[in-house]
Image 1 (cartoon, rainbow, N blue to C red):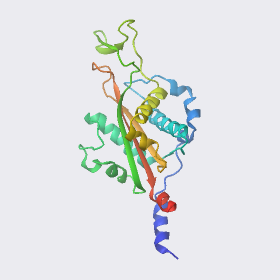
Image 2 (image 1 turned 90 degrees about the vertical axis):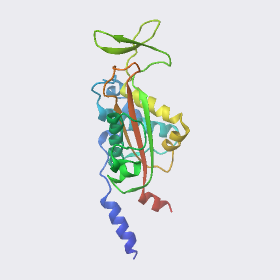
Image 3 (image 1 turned 135 degrees about the vertical axis):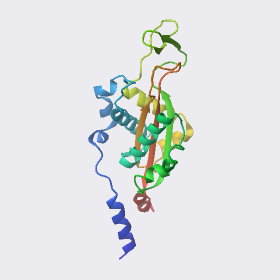
Image 4 (image 1 turned 45 degrees about the vertical axis):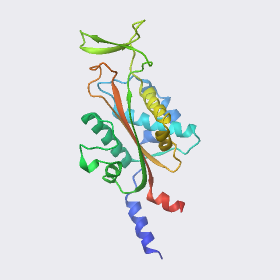
Length: 229
């Protein structure tokens, strides 16, 4: 009997997460049919759990459209993603390297703080505005509210924030339009993912539209790799 194989299997089983939360088990089209996903993002007090969920579902929507297996939610990858997204907002940077916390400098560091189940990993990050504007738009300062507004220069119509659904889908489209990010998102070898988005702390306080900083962490467990050999 291969005792080393049994030991490895037992180690892997003890690290297996429980079933995903119910919302993460929904099919993407069922999720996006819900009215809550069509709410405008309240930029100063977003529901971050709903936004993270929408980003996860938009990721799988893109995978399904490409004819690929959907990804399974993983709590360790999610914790690594939301921690990095929060750090990028808190310390105002956009990078795969977190130089503000040396124990979480790289993706590998961040994930291995949570688990050592994964031996193949990749990360997508991005910064995308949360106001749904065209390429050209105007900016004005409202003296009564002490905030900037973003508008159509000719009609003076104000542009509104994305909805939870449209923002998540918009971010995924930006990644799909980038060859490197697209390769990660549509990599058939990845089986699990954790997605998170955190929004700028002081929206409407700058001449540029408010933004979010977003993270996708992809992974393939060691056991999946062993099975494929």
